[in-house]
Every structure is written in structure tokens, then in C-alpha cells.
Length: 456
Image (cartoon, rainbow, N blue to C red):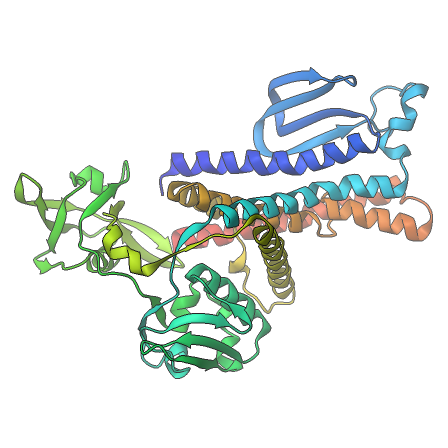
């Protein structure tokens, strides 16, 4: 992992999503006539601050970029008596529905951001890998269901499939149901067939970080020559002197015929020296010694040298599909995708609560930072998809009925509506203490999962 780049990408993602969330609260408060005193991105000492508008609202960029807040006029938090003329603009003086609307607006804006992000992605379109099976492991779930190399996935259940990205999401959602699953394929003879995965095999799929490995299939890809097309700064490939255009023809005396062979060898040699025989344009044959860096991949140590393959459009053309949609269709798909991802996250959370799903489904800040860096390095489309997923997560998480979260405030409002009067200040303080403990436990678990991945 390129730590500085991943950290920078993580901070950019945080800044965007926190701004979206807090702007939801800010927008609703302004619309409903509540006076906003401060809009802050980050906590702690202000780095930048300025005042705007008739209310002289203070806009702040603070030193600790791990959250934000909107401070509204409120008798419970005022340091001095509020003038009589402004009492009707205090948050605590608003009707229950107005206070609830202001609270729910933050998570709602996170979900709306995801809709807009997916809308843009679906309209612009993306080049994705066609869902064609390359290999099927003997005695695997896929083999027992009758899948064969060359099968192209057409539908999972009732859902049409256009790419491996579609297929993975559809398989994950179907796996959560735990029912028999019918996958429609077009085999290598052109015949359309149904492959049945029985429920006993489906049930375990949702627990696997690498769902395709659990199924026992790999996507079909062209056999690219082992020519270096990209070198990441600070990685073993750069340190050893590999250059773009180098063609690896052997490793430790073993012939290398394709990029896949090189990747497989490197992955099996974390922190073990490798001697590469390299053909360099206009130079000829030379040997390069490098030591792959070790990293964690779903609990297993694998090697990485920080190099990418030379893109060959002529070889990739038959394996890729361009997926794009018109504005109206894209908007419908965006709402559908946001709903589907939200429902999936809620189901995973629910299963974790009752012990039916592993805590390893959690992602802490380290994993999020890694994914931010990885997607940012892949381009704008990948990074926007990442932002959409994390924005949905933030929206759903903040709606959980945990005091100190937006959902906790909504729970207090519901109790007030049922009782006909607000909870006592003491009860709210005790509830917030419980909320802090629950959040601390959740964060500790997330860090534990992250560190477990890193340490193997």
C-alpha cells in the first residue's frame, strides 16, 4: 500500500462525505427557520474560519478531519441568555417534526449523494469485464452445479447480468437469501442453459470475502505477455530497477509465458528474493534481483512488487463490455442500486448482531484508507463508486438507534412523541454514555478486524 497516497485519498473521501452529511443538517435547519451558528468540517482547533450571511454563520475547517458538526441556536447549549427576539429560531423551541427532519436530513443527504454518484456513473458508463468463466476448480461449488469454462453469465435469479461487477453483487444478495439459486448462462456452444446452485451451497457464499474463490471459478481474461506497463513509486519493482517496457521472460530460471504466471509466482514469494530475466528494448537481456513486499490478502500473506501489466487493447477488446445508460434509465438504476446496497448492509448488520455473520464483514479506518487509495489509483469512476458505497454506509450507520448518532436522536424524539413530553436531561445524558460505549466497542472491533488482516 502506498501509505501517503492512500491517506490523502482517505482524507479527500472523508472531507467530501462529511461535508455532504453536515450540509444535510445545515440545509434542513436553514429551510425550517433555525439559526445556524457554526458549520464545521473537522473537530478541534480551527485552521480556517470565516463568517457569511445575515446570521453571520461561522464556517470552519478544523484540525482533526474525523467528523464535523452543525451548531444551532439552542437554549440547552447557550453560554448566555438568548434574546427574546431569537427564541423562536432556537432548535429546542421547534416542533417535534421539524427537529426530526433536521436530524434525519444528514443521513438522507448521504443516501442522495450515493444516488447522484451512481446516476453519473451509469450515464457516463464504464468499461467492465464480461462475465465469462475462465476456469472451474474440480469438486468446487461451481463444478458440482455444472458450470464450465466459457460459460457467460446472463442472469442470477431474475436479475440480468452484464459484467462481473453485476454478477458479484447479484450473487452476494442471492447468497444472503440462502435459497436455491438458478444462474442462466450461455455456454461455449452458444446454448442458453440454467445452472442450479443448491441452498446448502448458497448459504456459505455470503461469508466469503472472495466469493468467486468460494464458488471455485475465475473470470476469463486474455493471456497477456509479461510486459511492464506501470511501476508504482517506492515499490520493489522501482527499487530494483525495473522499467516500463521491460519484458520478463524468466524468474529464477523458470520460463514466464504470461503476466498471470508472473503474478502467481510473485504472490507465492512474499519477502523471498527473485531473479528476473528481463528483455529491455534497445538494451537486450539483463537480470534483476528483487524482493516482493508482503501484504495481507484475506488473511494470507502474498507477495507484491508494485508493477502493472502493459495494456493491450487489441487483446482485451473481446473480454470487455461498455455499459452506459440514458439519463432517465440511469436515474432509475441509481435509486435501485442505492436501495439494494442499503438493504444488503442492513441485512449484514442484522446477521452480525445475532451471530449469523462474521465480524470480519466490518471495515475499519485502515481498510477504508486502503480502498480509498486503491480506487483513486484506478481512476475517477472507481473512486466515485467507492464514495457512493461509503456514503451509504455512513447514512445507514447514522440511522441506527444508538444515542450520540442521528438515529439515537430520532429514538429520543419517538419516545417524546409517545410520552407527550421530552426525556429528562439526566436520562438523555445516561443514554449518550451508553451510546459512547457502544460506539467505542464497534470501533475497537473494526480496528481489531483491520489489524487481523494486516498481521495475517
